Image (cartoon, rainbow, N blue to C red):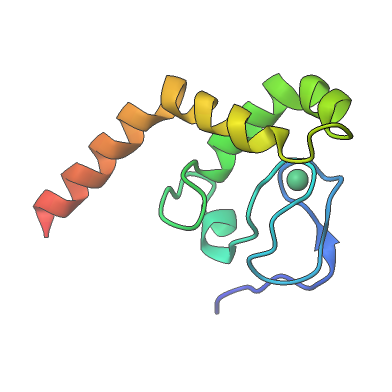
Length: 104
Ligand SMILES: [Zn+2]
């Protein structure tokens, strides 16, 4: 049986943001609530370009900066996570997607 999250709940990435419903975006770290990506921490298919594990890594490295800047720029994570994705995971994730598309 597929587990579903109970709402409201804490954000699975930062543990700070309050998530009210499915597909809510965390106001602190920018993670979008998604059951399949949260059940499989390595799943890259979903509303988030990065998997849960990748996003956690992003958050760990950027949380200080994000929490400090959030008041002036509530969407600071948007820019930072895009940069982080392009720098570390874009190539790996796109390769994986391409491989799986070739198999079908
Ligand atoms: Zn969060």
